[in-house]
Image 1 (spheres, one colour):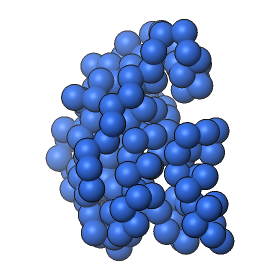
Image 2 (cartoon, rainbow, N blue to C red):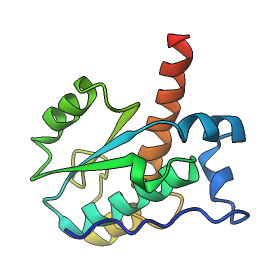
Image 3 (cartoon, rainbow, N blue to C red):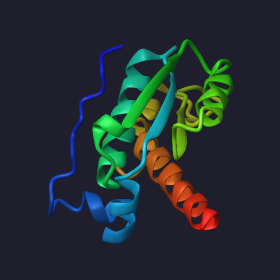
Length: 144
């Protein structure tokens, strides 16, 4: 699988607002490191989810250099990879991406899977990044 295309959110294009984060929250998140664990069994879908997640982190103020990707062969191995990332204490949060019928993308056809794996409001990669950033903010608030 190729590396994700880092597509930083350009100012004024609405990507920052799509993440629903304030400037203060983006500043806080920009100081953190995040992990993405992605199951790569369906390579094309995994790549689209990964690109969406990287774009979501960028919209949240997190640089591509602060997002670390860990690939697993399939959905079964994903929880263990996520556990290892979480237990490492290196990351503020871990986003898990899995294109399968019982995971992040639930669909009946390949067309539905492609539509839900990147590019619009149903972009599950971006949604995963936004969710993990929100959780990192809660964790940081509770630690104070």
